[in-house]
Image (cartoon, rainbow, N blue to C red; front, side, top):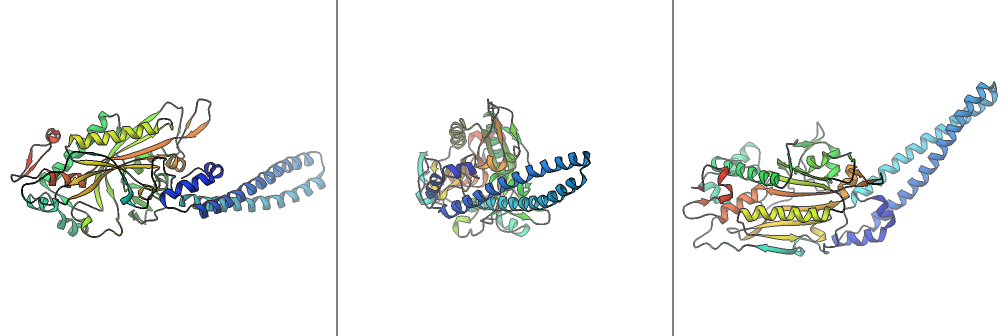
Length: 423
């Protein structure tokens, strides 16, 4: 959530910045500031009434002590009228608070200066490309054919048990998934991230804190009876560990990691792009999260990008890095770098990781602050990244490493498996 003070003092800059997303913020900002002005005036009136009430209440006690009963009763009558007025003003302030918050929730984060204007993924910038496309002598099978050939993943069984988008991993397919999870977690541990095992269900406050709620796109699974949400990523519970936290000083750099299943409704997804492992309702992912001093957050972003680079390089996959344009950048993010691996059989790029810097957007919702040297409070910066999402990594590995004899396992995974080839 953008800071109200920033909107007050930098109104035009905020409106102009959000144009990079092709988002017309002017009507919302104007309505918000009108409500904000009304809130401030009402708040001032309320404080005046409350102060007067305190003075009169004190006076009533003194008058009774002095035996001036008639004067004391007159003052009490005035107190009753003021209390009614105070109650009405409190209700008005609460209503204005809710209205302002509703407007605030509608405003996405202002893109970083490096983010270019754009409407969709077609306008994303390719920052780097590493490796080259694998050339096959014969026909390359897509991963859904490979998983069937070697009995690695049963998509039909998942449909029977739950529905489309909930695959069942079997045998070497399950072991490969487990090996990748262990590898990603070990690499995060080496980089200084502290591993956590977190709940897969979160409350509304947690979803609001990281920007998934209010859920305008209907992507989250909601358990209505208990009013809990299945997590779309472990970013939500990991970051919410620090909701309503005041860090005691400026000397902090917090690094968290965790493996979880993730759940997304993927409403509106259809066609060839959702086949096999390309787009699932349940998938596994290792996430990295950082909470940083504002002076260190851009450096932290570079370090996270380099971390994901290292994972893909060790797996030997052909990948590229994109800096998303304004229109393709997530609601809460100020800047996002996507990693895509090349799918040799499908002849297309598959997104496997997003690394994002949120500046104070999440921290403002979370009330995540720290004490400065001069004892003032300041909002921290938050970051997160997939390191990594499993389905498309597995899809790319199966397709790129297939041979006539079977699928070759990258050497970096050998210590985690009792086989070096799927055959």
